[in-house]
Each structure stands twice: as structure tokens, then as C-alpha cells.
Length: 250
Ligand code: SAH
Image (cartoon, rainbow, N blue to C red):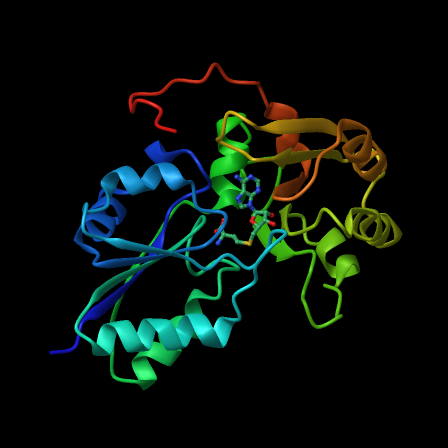
């Protein structure tokens, strides 16, 4: 009998932002494949018998090619295992969840998607930044600062979009991104923020203007993973007092 794969979004970091469905899928799994952005605190919801495989793609020591991850999932599911493939944020937002779903479908493996809170919404929300706000923007655009294939997003079109810009994977390219947006006509004074490790105790953030974002990020020592938020909604931010129901586990 063939198993099943859950493609689970674990949210931006705080384990309290897991959905009930994510907790159930994690608890049902025989094998968990964890991305490196996933907070290990989620393992408190795993069955004691569950095997944990780290498949992070960044970091100093190891990298797991995408084909290897997909092959592992197929092998485990064909052997009848319940697999939870756990990703940071939402599995379908810059998470390669779509590719994995297609590979599993093609192989005839049952796959269930468990949506999660994407960093681009949950991270600014923690600081009181709504990604849309009537009167301040016409919508929100999620965009990657790092396409992987060398192409850059159309910053001119994005500058003219009237939407809040939420940029994932934009730390390394920040100066090019802000330069592109300013060249595209977005005001230098547009409110901008960079937030690293949002929803986690290690969070770092800067609030500044579009023109100063790259320099202020560098001065504040903000690195990856961080989201860049550009637009008038950034002015609504307030630093929160953290609250928590779950006990912290190491
Ligand atoms: N699927 C994920 C995104 C994966 S791409 C999601 O939906 O959130 C990885 C990028 O997500 C990082 O480079 C960063 O831009 C963003 N990110 C993920 N977790 C974050 C966090 N806790 N704080 C800030 N940015 C985060």
C-alpha cells in the first residue's frame, strides 16, 4: 500500500503560528523532511517513532539537491510511509512546493497541501504592518529578489504598481532592488523596512526610507532570512510585546 505526502507550511518561525492541520500532519508522519527555515520546536508535535531528515539547502555544511529530496519522498511514500515535507512559511510561496506536488502527482502518490502563514504576511503583521490598507495601497505584490536564473524582476513596473512590495530573498540584492525601484520612479522617501527572523526571539528590524534601506540594513547587521517591505503601510508599525502560550522548548 502506498503512503502519502503532506506538503506542510510551518509558518514564519513562531511555532504558535502553525495551523491545527499542520500539527496533525506532523503528528501523523512516520518521516519528517525538514527545510532549514523550519523551527525545530515543531518536533514537539511529532510522534516519538518519527524519523527526522534534515534537507536544508543553505548553511555551511550541507546542501540537498531538489531531485534528491523528491526521490526520497517518492521512495518513502512507495514504501507505505506517511511523509510530512515541512517548509517554512507557506509551501506554495517561493517554496518549490508546486514542483514537488507535480513530481508526486506524476508518480501517482497521494499529496495533501497544508497551507501555512507566509513570511511576507506574518512577519510584517507581527510588527503591526498590514500588507494592504485601504487608502495606502491598491494591493500587495510578493516578489523574489533572487530569481536564481539571473533575471531581475521588472522594478519599473513594480514601482508603478501602487502596491505594497514584499520582497523575499532580497538581502544580497538590496542595493540593486532599491536602486531599480528609485530609477523606476518610486520616491526615495517611501517608507521601507527590513525584518530578519520575524516572529522569533532573534528578530532584528530596521525602519527607514527606500533610499536608505540598503545602508541601514548593513549598519544594523541584518542578514538572511529577511523580508523587505516597501510602501506607506510600513509607517503603521509598532514594536509588539511578545506573547506566548506554548512553553519554549530547546
Ligand atoms: N515558503 C516561505 C518562503 C521561502 S523563501 C514562506 O512562505 O514564507 C525564503 C525567504 O523567506 C527568506 O529569504 C526570507 O525572505 C523569507 N523568510 C522566511 N522566514 C522568515 C522570517 N522568519 N523572517 C523574515 N523573512 C523570512
